[in-house]
Length: 294
Image (cartoon, rainbow, N blue to C red; front, side):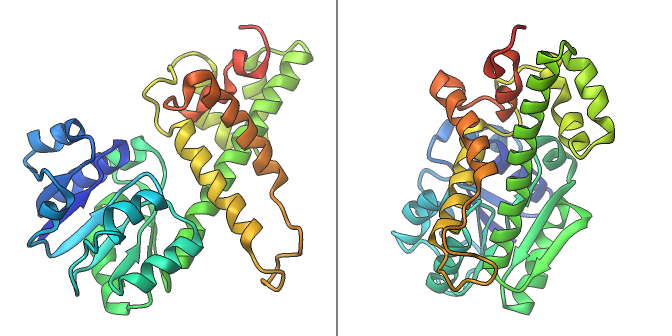
């Protein structure tokens, strides 16, 4: 299949690599230098997004957020009639509704996981569209990205977008919980290593295992798996989704809020303000960020 792949950042590059083995890939990125690894692997590089999609049988987008999707795809009317559009960008449920209304072939395909699982083809992947045949086609296309147990077709783009935001809410709030557990341990005279060990039998075991190498200093946060900028952007989508929900929305009370997520976002924003937005979001867990000694 001739596929146009728009957006070759960290995650987009890993997803595109999996498609190169079976398909003819043309790639585009706003910063052209970021297409170099895929060009070396055999992809054709297009100078513009419009040229990338010319003649494509399917379009994949992996952009930073919904504003980038609107600017790159919707504003110029980039998707030809009848061509499937597979969007891996993290967007809100309302954004997904808008995109599906604008382009009938829109399929929301957000991925859950970081760069390691992406390279291994072990991500969680949602495939959301009401078109049964299109959903089956895309499930087959993206199977190389996914842990088979975590590849899930859903009946709407909105449902897929919601699934991704729920996953990232759990990640952000868990990281904030780990940050506070480490601060509590330090205040009690317990080392970070001892705190991580004690958390092994708690609900924070998963995040402690995932981010323990950053806490121990075994890995630096520069060039990490999931940036503070990116998860903060996703947290704002979650907060806006709840804030904009109508009073009659099922399960959503007037004045509903996400206070735990707002706490996590405040920690992320502090690190972004300190110049660490392009670092792995584990930067919030480091001793300096927590106000404790190294």
